Amino acid sequence: MTWSEMVPLLWEATKESAYMVLVATLLTAVGGLLVGVALVLTDRGGLLALRPVNALLGLIVNIGRSLPFIILLVAIIPFTRAVVGTTIGTSAAIVPLTVGAIPFYARIVETAIREVNRDVVAAAKAMGASRREIVVKVLLREARPGLVAGLTITVVALVGYSAMAGVVGGGGLGDLAIRYGYQRFETGVMIATVVLLVVFVQLAQMLGDLVARRLSHR
Amino acid sequence: MIRINGLRKTYRGRGGDVAAVAGVDLTVRAGEVFGVLGRSGAGKSTLLRCVNMLERPDAGTITVDGVDLAGLSETGLRTARQRIGMIHQHFALLSSRTAAGNVAFPLEVMGMPRRQRADRVAELLDLVGLRDRAGAYPAQLSGGQKQRVGIARALAGEPKVLLSDEATSALDPDTTGSILALLRDLNQRLGLTILLITHEMEVVKRICDSVAIMSDGVITEAGPVHELLARPDSALARGIFRLGPPPVLDDATIVDVTVVGDGSLISDVARTHDVDVRILDGSVETLAGGRAGLLRLALPGSPASNAAALSQLRAGAVAVEVHP
Image 1 (cartoon, chains in turn yellow, green):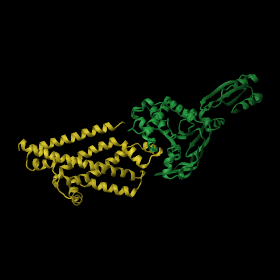
Image 2 (cartoon, chains in turn purple, orange):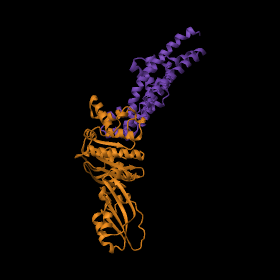
Image 3 (spheres, chains in turn cyan, yellow):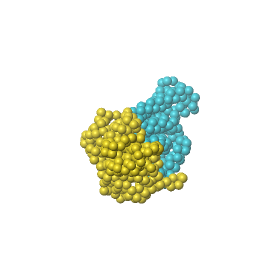
Image 4 (cartoon, chains in turn red, purple):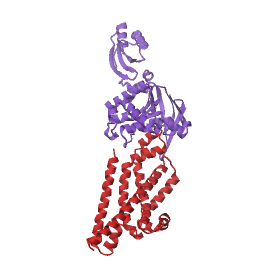
């Protein structure tokens, strides 16, 4: 395969990967924060201690995390159809990506929030802060560097997951590497996609580190 | 200002229940600095955290400025807390906010408009001498500066009561001195009532008007510092004035005298009765309410022959104890 044949393929695949990963990241950030905060609040000694809810939520998160992504991708096809109306294509791939990444990020959010100094939470309570204020102004705000670092890890994991999106016709760099590089022995395509994926991950990591450092005042 | 009655708080632990506070009654008068002194694990911290309901007591009542806190709804309690300041051993500042941002936090909670907030923050930072560090993050401040931010933050709601949870325990002696001086100054200038807990006798000596000694969840001794010091058998007096066993002297009367103020009593006695008063040992302390000391004197002759001098000592001193 020549360069001129390869470039449009790579460009198309890069756009698909970027689209899938970006949209899935945004949805995961929102979903993961909600679930992560809920995990902390409902735990024993939490601001909204509700053990049964906590146990159920933890179980769902753990199930989500134990399923291999390729299985999840297929298993939730009916759900995907209900959400986006189709089960093939890039948009359809975003659903399993998000469903797979939310439990992952939720656990990171949970850990980051638990790292917040308990004294500071007690101090906020002593100042008469409401639960909402404690969550928004203390827990999430203080945990910000950890939340951003965790989101960076999640983005990198999503890049990996998105390689499997080819199964549902989602396209992207991983799919390209499998179809051309692996199945058709196009070593050139293989190397090019790997390089692009490395650049992709590198950029995400650098950006994440930069933001996390900016937010950290420890 | 603060009235605690029959307070109990028990923690359920793996090794059985632990009664952190096992029946405490305490009254803190308006405008005084009241210290609760005890070793770690004595239950002081739990006691203090019950005063603003960070810990819910199992039994007993807590009244702050006439309001029974246990009877308040969640919303009522939040409002009441805004009028009770608290400072912490490890400062408990938000690391993601500047000094000014930390002081602004309680003002935001109170719902003060942004414009007013900036003025009030500047005023509060001024009060603790930190105006020039307004933009610094806690990580850029020294321990003493962090506690000053903590104090400014605690005063944001113009509280009548300030709770101090070992506020100087993480600080070096010099910084401890300056923070205690600031607290004393705020106590006097603003009429702020301060309830503090500490394990350091030094803190009690320097700023407390009254003290309660706590061990194993109960208060073993409480009262105004000068009254407790006047009782040589009190734990406070024994903790502050440390003298060894009296020496054995032939034909002399050994007497321990607790004095307050300038101590001119000793020379008065020496002059009036023309006796050679020797000071064998002594411990004089500068306390919040003035100076006090325990002096061990030797007078020549037997106690009987010194009856007149001893009675003058008894009349002028806070306490007199004659060694047999």
